[in-house]
Structure formats: structure tokens, C-alpha cells
Image 1 (tube, rainbow, N blue to C red):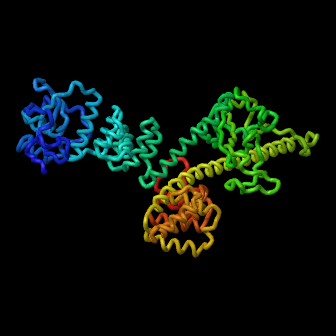
Image 2 (cartoon, rainbow, N blue to C red; image 1 turned 135 degrees about the horizontal axis):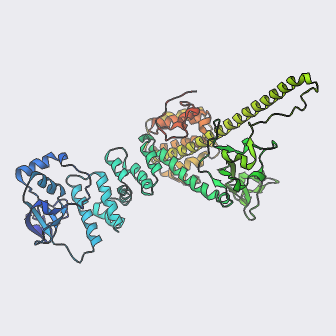
Image 3 (tube, helix red, strand yellow; image 1 turned 90 degrees about the vertical axis):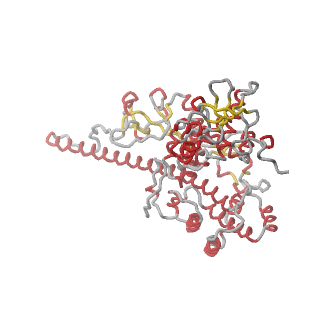
Length: 569
């Protein structure tokens, strides 16, 4: 039976289909001065009456036609607006003396938090169906409801929104910066949720870095930041033994360049006797600072005893094949495990050198006139002095050049470290993109030509080491599901089978695109990255270097990434 919309008893007042002038349950109709209606608690935080001229014109001409819903007692002097904030404020601005109100007596038995939750969810629901809240306002309301104790399920059901979206909105709503970024169109909801996580834990550096990043590079920059924070946590855990021994811990690798460095690397120091600095000089109480770094080659140890094992004595072909027998004279990979290996660099403040009895290797004292043919003839004294000066100058020049070479080597090594970090972040973001791409049911238009070109250029590419495992992971598996993939192919439609073929080719080439591909020229990787660029993946600087569009020496390793200029080699 069709309900009679003229009978309030037949309508659910919370229904989107209910006319807004239908009396809510347990409400009485009254007229009130809008100045007596309290509007301070409302999920709508961002509004301007000038943005709603049609509403203002209507109220000026006809008054408030749709009653405002408020909580309060009929004999009370004030009431709290539940629905109708804009109507109330507009009436006040225009000078309307009386407005219609559905007045609901508050349920004294209802807990304060529960009443507030109900108010929030009702306001969001009503405003979603009238003058829409901004995304930021809506997120703020959801965050407040969650903070008051509402479950994600309750909020999602009330707002007819998926749980994941409620969780995401809860993060954004707790961050004023994220709400503003959404409302300004600077970030989408997914990006704003990432930014909110950092603001909500007080990581202002990450927030600033993300806000300064070009939107197309946001996912990449966010991954760089996440990896950096994880690396820092690992770093400070690993450096604890040095800290407990009394060494100062450096947060970043120091700049030791320039004529007057603040910190001096131990390799650039010698003793008063000209001997290099060794472990005996590294007393913590002398003011030494330490920076540790994870070595590129991990430490191999015996799984049972913890003893260090020479990696060359392990048959690594047995690593993924537990039943395989190791080659003669070698051990099975299951007998060992690999651990992070850390190497330390030590630095001394320049103003502590004298106290430590050390000096820069460029601070060469006057050389003794030995083994340079100095004569006892007084008439040759000037020649002897000149010879000593020349020897000292040559020694000083050689030491300066050696120190410069060491500094250049350290800077080059740092560039490699930082670019590899960028390469790792780029690889992680790229694989997420490819995984989404391979979830399609049909090929993108550019794929057929790419597949043909890739297989004609390198017919054996699908058989390369770990090519299938990488493809399987990108296609949504675990990297070991050849049999399962065969079953998928048997039942898949032809269009999906074509996507699987694309996945096999992409997996083979992605396996080659390692974190340091920026320093190599591989035609397969170049073809692969160019294809991804065609189908919507935005190449970041290290990927541009890999395809030859950017000289890796021009990649900034100290500031957030922005749109790079092409510097071809």
C-alpha cells in the first residue's frame, strides 16, 4: 500500500523521501526568535551565507518555510538546532523575528555522548540530501562521532557508507590541514588520509613535504617518507649499542666539506706522530659522534649457533628449493640466515681536535730535512730551507688532494644511497600501479603493440630468472602459483587471457627494473617504463634517468620531488 504522505504517522522522519516540513516524532510546533536558537555545535564548519543567495532571497520574500528542528523545552528560553543551521543564521542576518520550529524535548535518559553522536549523524544525513556539506565538514563530523565512541559499523550504517571510507574520513576529519586540502581540491580523499596520518602524530615535516609535492608525484613522495620513517626507526634501534657506549648519535650524515668543517671524519685525521686514527683513539669521552649505515651485503650467520658464516660457502640455489641437495663442499641455505650488517663512520667536532691530540692531515708541520740532500755547507743554508719548504708544500698539496678525493667519494656514495632509496620507493609505487593495471578484464589499447615489440626484441624474456614469480605477484598471487595460474587460464575468457599474457611480459621486465636501474641503460626496462607512461603511470626522476630523459647527476637528493627538468646525457 502506498503511504499517505499527508499523514505524519505514515512517514519516517529520518527518511530522505520525507518532506522536510513533516513533524518529527515527539515534536511540537512553535515559533521562536532565531536569536534564541543555539547553532554552535554543528558538523558544518565551513560556510558563508553569501554562498547561498537563493536561500537568502527566498527567506527574505517568504520567511522560513521549512521548520527548523531543535532540542529544547517549550518553556525554555533557548533551544539547540539539530537541523536548520543555515535557515537559522540566514533568518538572523535578514532580520526575521519569528521562525517555525519543530521543538523536540530532549530525552533525559539518553547519555550525553550518545545524544551527541545521534545529533552528528542526523545532521550529516540531512545535509547530504540538501545543501551538501563540504567533504572536509563531513569528515570532521565522522571523526567526532568516532571519537565520541561510535563504532565504524554504526557510522557506516547511519550514513550508508562503506567501512573503509568511514575509517578514511575519520583520519581526515581529525586533521584540519587534510580537511582544507580536500575542500580546496589540492588532494583527493586517499591522499588527504595519508597526510592526516602524519599530522595526527605531529610529523609536521612530512605534512609540509606532502603539501609541497606535485600532486602527480604524491604517492611516490608518500612512499619515500614512509620508507624514511621506517628506516629511521630501524636506525635508532641499531645504533643503541653505540649510544649506550657513550658516543653521540648523528641523525643525518654530516657535511664535512668546506675549508672550516664543523665535524671531521676520522679518516681525515692523524695523530701528532702522523699515524692514522685507529680504534684506540675512538674513546667516547673524547666527543666522538657516530653515523651507522646498513651495508649492502648482509651478514650471513649460522641459524643454530649464530656464528658468522662466509656467504661463499652456501649453495644459494637451494634457497627456494628445500629438497635440493647443495653442491659438493657447500652448505644448504636452510642452515643459515641473513641479518642486517651495520658499518660505522666516526666524526669529531673540529674544536675538539687539540684536546684529542689529533690534527687534520692537511695541517702538515715543517718537514725535517732528511733524505733530501741537505748540505752542511753554510753557504747552502738557503737552498736547504727552500728544499724544506718545497717538500712541505708538496706534502700538503698531496694531502689536500687526497682529502678532496675522499670527500668526493663520500658524496658519490651518498648520492648512490639516496638515489637507491628513491629507486626503491619508485619500484613499490610502480608495482602497485601495475597490479591495478593487471586487475583489468581487457587490455588497454596500447598493450598489444607493446607485447609484440617486447617479445620480438627479446623472445627469451619470459624465461629469465624469477620472471614468472614477479609476474605472478603482479597478477595477484604469491609468486609461486604456476599451477593455480594454469587453472585460471583454463577458465578465463579470451580477453582476460590477453591480460595475463601482458602480466607475464610486465613481470619479466619489472624483475629487471631494480632500485638502481637509474644508473643503467637497459632497452627492455626502457620499453617497459615507456609503456607504463603511456597507460597513465607518471615517471619519477629515477625512472626518467632509467629511460635516458634525465641525467641522474641532476636529481635532487635533498628536497621533496617536483616536476623535473629534462637533462639528457
